[in-house]
Image 1: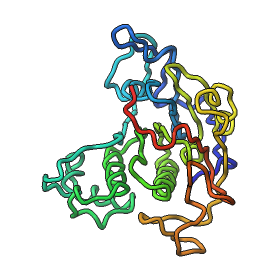
Image 2 (image 1 turned 90 degrees about the vertical axis):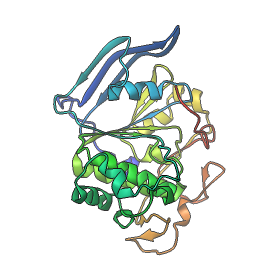
Image 3 (image 1 turned 60 degrees about the vertical axis):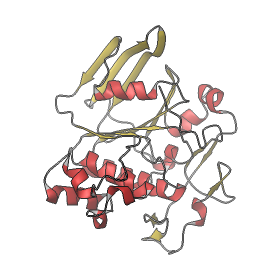
Image 4 (image 1 turned 180 degrees about the horizontal axis):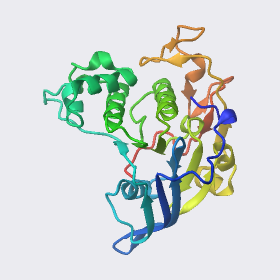
Length: 292
């Protein structure tokens, strides 16, 4: 996972945006949901959208995806834009006899490409397994594989680690960072949780119907608007990672073979001596209510 201390340098200002939003406003009936929102999504950059419930995150994502039109403002999309979307969750009737392979073939009928996508996200061995039998982490990886089948230059990931334990979350964020590097794609992530996501991003946009603050994780974590929303007890911490995690939280490709002791979080804060990178906020811990 990306360490905040070694984040990529800011993108060249001359780089062509995949999507540029300027002055976006959206209301439902007489209730404003978004006001004067600006957002640039660039190749090779991870942008994470955070904010409380009702902040307008889901509405903004729908505008990025082209599913909603803003009431005012401008949306400019690159002519080469190709989006891969990973939904927050997907309900599949557990009685439906649907294999992972068949699910992916709804997006791409090529079996070889489906297998390659599963291999890239680390679950090729589950290709013939029923979707109903997947764990939370396996389900999220399957949805990510489906997004990759679109051959995207922009990945939009809505709560990509929902239903995954802390060590599984870290492994997913590490995978997302690797995909960014390999594909040089832009990534827009949406999250309620701060305890690991702030270490996995280049830029944070804090939304509460308008953009309260934005910048690097270090900049945002001390911004008065961020502190006002999430509290002064929000703590920034760093992770010097010398190993990787498998799907079951074990350590692979590192000096240890047991679960990483530094990866456990208790009461929303790192264990004593933890060196993880991110921001921990008890204000957001455990909240997954529907956003606007």
